[in-house]
Length: 543
Image 1 (tube, helix red, strand yellow):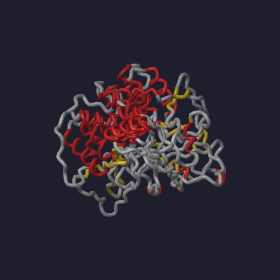
Image 2 (image 1 turned 90 degrees about the vertical axis):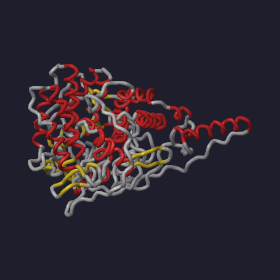
Image 3 (image 1 turned 60 degrees about the vertical axis):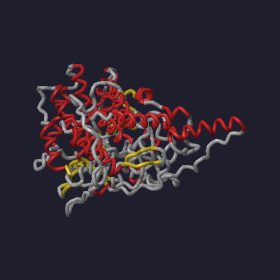
């Protein structure tokens, strides 16, 4: 993890040559930040089944605009996959033995869901995170950073030239390397293969640092340093090779916080001073987002209107996202540790503002965010539970961490076929599994001392990697804002969490000591409502 930038070609096309509006909607959101009211997404339609698990025995606009073909589907026109297959019917003793093996696998993994488009193989019944997490990490690749003269979009819809970018020996993460691995996605999604998201690059750098590959982390962070804007922020995403569009004026607090965190971690490891200047500029930008009344950091600036047909670069976001502020809390804490001379906002003050304005006592979770009119009481998986639990653990509050995990299990947990899933939020009608945000649950459980549960979550993610391939699929269904496509974000989170659970140091959103608490007792479900006059904003773009 907000509206995602659209990708006009250079020069900006005429209105009749722009992509279908559906392709300019937020496709790859992975954050709980409130969305501009003008960009409220409709509910997803007809999401297909999740890939069969071991039980079968066996990121947002990455395109150049074009003239839409008459048969192009809207993003909301999700295609269902074909009917499920039955189990293979063998004959004679061979058939009997296969049936016995199948029954044994079903006992361990659940009922089969055969689908001719999905992988088969007995190995997924026994997939282990110790094997699949390293495989997942190795599947993440980069592309050389191409020197460019990028452009942005102005308020009048014309291309705005940006300063030329040169970066020797630099690399960028391939955020969505195989958009068409699974059928059923929207028309044009294959062009995401040429788009790189800044948040994904920060995650990639953090993973490689944790693995000891300082050179790979440095290459990506050098590219991000080159992409930093004059005001200290970063745009949302950029082209890898085919185009030079960089929506530099579409800025989000969460994105800036994640890059600051990755650079701070690099400096803590190397003491090189290479990224200190960039860190201080990012810290200054975050300071400028602070709301004087609440102390929370607002979402940033820039917005797309009319389904991506019009951009307002000067728009100042008036909402604050819980997730963005949690991101900033950890980033500012690490920046202050690695750059003692830097002038950063106090992470403790951000934590106090989150507690004072975003905690919902009756619901027992954090709100998704806040507008001037009041709290956005939607329960989002990351802001309310999984990332909130890590935030509480970092503050030495294990009881609260355990409680919020329990609440999101009650509110958002469920089943999709053979998978245990967690929906993105309580406003989503789709039963898509938000894989990225659910990985943090395993990390929180591990830090709470609940090793068996943490390992169970990781083993399911290993089966997910085995069944769906690596990088891990972002979602279990083609749903609005949650594409069923291989992605960096869930893969990097899985690899990072698995390393810590296997005995590595506390690294991602680190705590000095992992507190232990007993299993929480079940609580009575409560319902949170927004105060009178408050409009609950929708989900916003990734980070």
